[in-house]
Length: 158
Image (cartoon, rainbow, N blue to C red; front, side):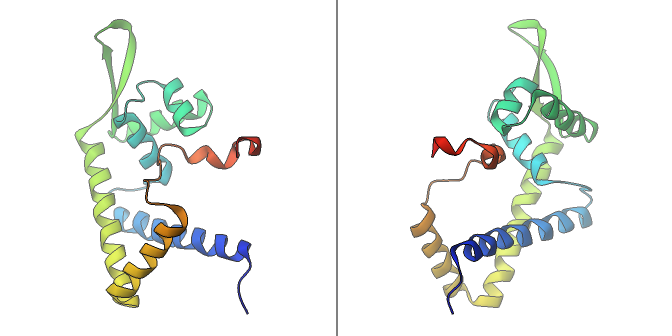
């Protein structure tokens, strides 16, 4: 009996969650404690030019206050820093630190290792076929990781 469309969506979400949870656990084993997907989204947004809490909030589709809390956590962990804006001394600009980039790089390596495990389970050819099928269904353009708030957007935009 075929699955429903909702079951398919949940299975895809389950795959994302399985990979993400495994990556978080592996990063913790490697000494990067308590990394969360929002930290990755936020650091990528900062690296791409989100220089303030307001801009980060817009890119993450969260309030400025929520973005500020995320920034505080990232700064506490040494992954993001703020520095004086050379164009306006009253402003501070956010920057990803070398340690922050290390966390991002380690995360990417962990996901590559997790993909390799899936390839061992399914076979490389089967996993490549699955990936090609996903590309055919969802497209090959990269997903914007700095916009997790898409779930809360107005459905009138669709």
